Image 1 (spheres, rainbow, N blue to C red):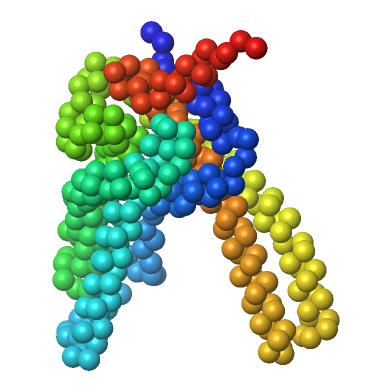
Image 2 (spheres, rainbow, N blue to C red):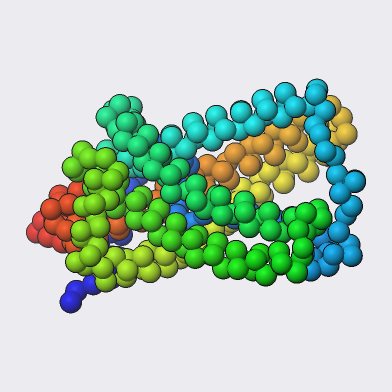
Amino acid sequence: MVLHALQDVDDALEATRSFLFPLRLGRWLKLALIAFFVGGGTSMPTVQIPGGTSSPSDPGTSPSTGDIPTSIPDDVLPLLVAGLAAVVVIWLVLGAVSATMEFLLVESLRQRRVALREYWGARWRQGLRLFGFRVLIGLPVVALFIGWIALFVAPLMGFADPMIAFPAFLIGLAALAVIGVLFTVVDTLTTVFVVPIMVIQDAGVLAAWRRLWASIRVAWKQYLVYLLVAGLLGIAASLLATIGVGVVALAFLIPVAVLAFAVQATLTFASTVGGAILAVLVVAYLAAVFVVWLLAQAAIVTYLRYYALFVLGDVEPSLDLIPNQRAAVRNPPVA
């Protein structure tokens, strides 16, 4: 049995090279914008939990509940509500835009041209459906995470017995890990396979998932190998991009440092003009590095998504979204 996930690694690279080169600045910048919202990978953001010197099993150091405010001042509550509402609105907008950008990326690779406004007008409704699906599958993970945090906080606040809460905390950690892996798999398959099926069949998320699930039941080994190989490719690409961007950042730092020393020698940073020039240099440097990082992400996203499209089309020829690119890579014209 041919494992398409292994066979398509080189084919996707060749298709990516053909799409990105010769260099077209406009295309790269548009892809960088898409990559900013789509991201270079499918990993979930990490959440850092501040810790202290005490643990859930140390009731002797738990703070007294009398030290904890039991109410919110009237003048602070409206600000908190407004701030929370603003965060929710921003999250909804960015989430909807990010979901729609998935379709813009697939259409760009399919048609070998990046037309943001055209694709947005055709796919924004499907983008909203995808966003709704992501929220739906993400809610159980968020609820479980909040409950897990509550098991950690409750003993510290004196609301639960540490001897009971700590074992439950460990069990919750294991459950959170399992649910997190399951969520990552479902979210990844939705992004890389369900979205193309929605495009080619002009279907909704659930209909596309039913079509994908029928394929998974028949060729589950192909999809399992894809998940493993795609994960390794994502890690390797991220490492290479980090090294490349780091080298470029160091190269950019040299002229910035020279200019900074010149400003310090002539005006000093303590002066208003010198401080303003230093601020401009720092902002320009950070902006340049950020643009380079976005361009690197554009290349990574293009390759990884082409790779997924190659695998999907090989496993299910009826779902091949890029037949022309596939033919050009595997049957190049004879000179």
